[in-house]
Image (tube, rainbow, N blue to C red; front, side):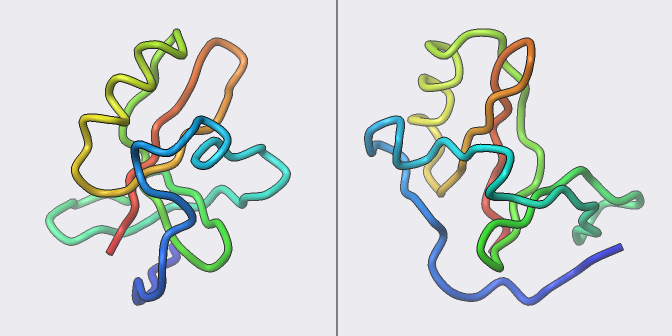
Length: 91
């Protein structure tokens, strides 16, 4: 299990062009995060020393972009074989 103090700036804010918050698999590392209020660890990714937890899987880019733009915080999106995954920044 990995936990880390979340400091610094996340890589992108919602509302920027797609390229600003879509990450390629080679630029990140998958991990498990133990979050407060959860009994079990959740799926997560690490990108440039910052951590993101799994938020939602969507099958189309339009759905992913719509949800990502509604989030008030920051997130990143990764492509997967059957769609897109939104990851929420862990402060």
